[in-house]
Length: 415
Image (cartoon, rainbow, N blue to C red; front, side):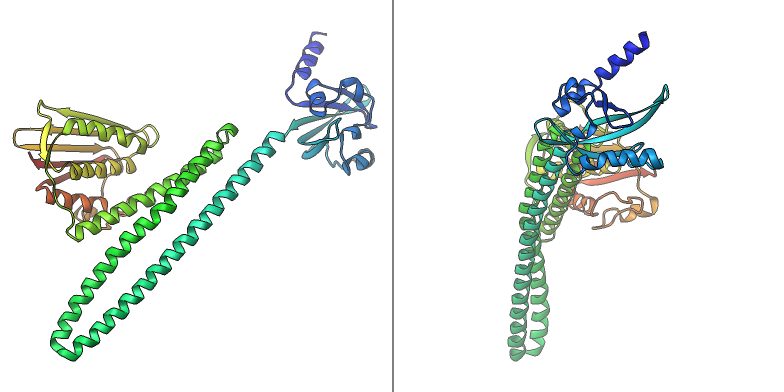
């Protein structure tokens, strides 16, 4: 008796609907959740054919399915999960998932149907599809804009080529020897200008669509929060990571182009190195993965130096960013600064994948990447740019590294 009372309490308080019918399709019992789903009171449906709760065409075929199963034993719904539409008392319909079990006791056969409402899931799917469609349209628009930009660059290149050709013919008439020398010089300058112009234009033209993609991804993430769907957040984060990677690549190309053009000059100023270290540590928190931590410490009583603050900050960010990328998600990154009477030392250490010994001699070459970086993103420009910044500041770079043990970079500047 106690077990029966407990079972009835469980059924009455179940979140999903539960309906039992006899072998003729007549409803024998219905729990409160099912009553709420179909907007009926129990006494209105008990004794009625289950087809009362079905829209057409399922309603007219249901008794045939039941008869066929009793005659042949071939199940159409029984023992299988299936998505169906339910018919409420007011004539509206709603989606649900139905699981039917066959129960035999006391010489009778009863069928129990478990009903899980899918209304919220279907609504969430529709909204997600809508957001995906909007994002696809925006991507198509940005792609078209980029294509137009590339076409404009191609047209500019063709015009420059024509100008160089005309210049070649004019100089040839004046003096052959002088023409050959001048032509080589002009061609080299023209290619350099074209490259610089392309890098500058491409960088600025790409930033607008990249910013829109990043903004759209953030909006999708925010609008999807009420649905608590992990897959949306995962794919939105992938979009954001891709945008940040492309932006970083553009920044590196611009920095390299300015260095090659001799446009980078040191601007000395007096600043607090310890305060800047704390600021960088705070800024880089957003780039950390998993449970990574940056531990910053300044030693010594001296905190102020006179150097190019922006170039030093860029060098530190390059090294910390590399430490984050090439270290595990549980790792600690040590960031240490020290000032003596004659020099300033900055040390950044990680316990990441390390640098193979055969690759260490090429580490500061542009576009070079160690052979153990695998699928980790990067363009091989960071350390090349860092070395050139250090040279401008009369600084030195040293490093020690062991495979799977980590890497230590030490930057030293005259105070």
